[in-house]
Image 1 (tube, rainbow, N blue to C red):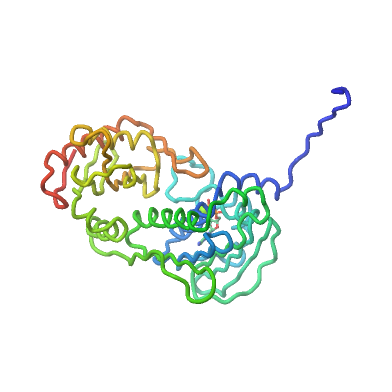
Image 2: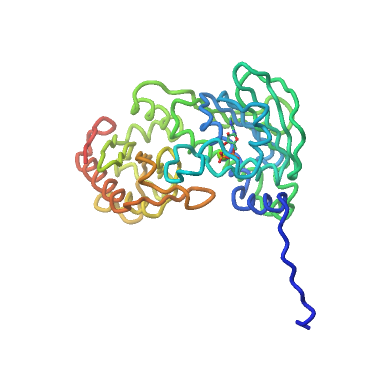
Amino acid sequence: NIGEFRPVIRQLDDSAINRIAAGEVVERPASAVKELVENAIDAGATRITVEVADGGKTLIRVSDDGCGITAEDLPLALARHATSKIDGSDLLNIHTFGFRGEALPSLGAVGRLTLTSRVPGETAAAIRVAGGRMDPVRPAALRAGTVAELRDLFYATPARLKFLRSDRSEMQAITDVVKRLAMAEPAIAFSLRDVSGEGEGREIFRADAETGDLFDALSGRLSTILGREFTENAIRIDASREGLRLFGLAALPTYSRGAAVAQFLFVNTRPVKDKMLHGALRAAYADVLARDRHPAAALFIDCDPELVDVNVHPAKSEVRFRDPGLARGLIVSALRHALAEGGHRASSTVAA
Ligand code: ADP
Ligand code: MG
């Protein structure tokens, strides 16, 4: 009987709000790894270590040598919508991966998160939050930087826990995330270890810091991640148009793949999966590749943050260019031009 149904509007408490937000930000262990590694990159780290147990379900530990967090700021780092990266007045001018201040409170709502950190000249401190409940800051031991340790992801949201795949496939997703971020940051040393069970653990991926000019560093890093065969069969792309710069390596048509598994696109170092950009890549190769073949490329677009909106989705893999035609045109013309000159392999540089 509808007459007896009395809906009551209630304000949700923070812990419920954080668990709901976490559903958007943290889909699986790989999304937690992405958030923590991005924080380390934003902190100016030169070395980032990721340790994972049981596909990230029981443990994800990300250590960096970045700027650290003061003891005073530790509770704020875990507070919702608290960020050091923007001041809210200029959402169009974002230079960091983070800006929403949502990742850490979300992780702390659905798992057990301990942050240990030290800024130069101060003593180290740690804070722990589990299922949304925060303990007071306590003194800790750490040489420098930050260690974010996330245990028992989704223990507080059992429904989500049930949807996780095997340890093996979660580990694969984590490896993909780390490699993708590492592609765009050749100057940072990365290491990913599986520390399941007893003992030292097993190195899954390692990339030493690359030095040298942009293309030397990038080629070195891409060799490590995609293999020498890719870099030896790729052309250097470097073209600019109206404030957009496109650079990277695009493979010769002969190195194409049966599936679109080797297409890596970045906007302002942010890995993106964007229909328009992937479409442009395909269009650029249309004349030189059979329909069932897919080009392989790692391409980076750099531009003033005002020319691109990264605020489209919490997971932030989509972007929206102010002038999508410009980005598309740049990719198509620069790649066609470079492919036409083709034979020069990994040595030719072209201008659009
Ligand atoms: P966002 O990255 O969007 O700012 P987060 O919840 O990921 O939000 O982090 C909140 C804040 O905690 C950051 O703005 C930053 O000041 C601090 N922080 C997080 N991780 C690190 C880190 N590894 N090193 C230094 N500061 C960090
Ligand atoms: Mg962040």
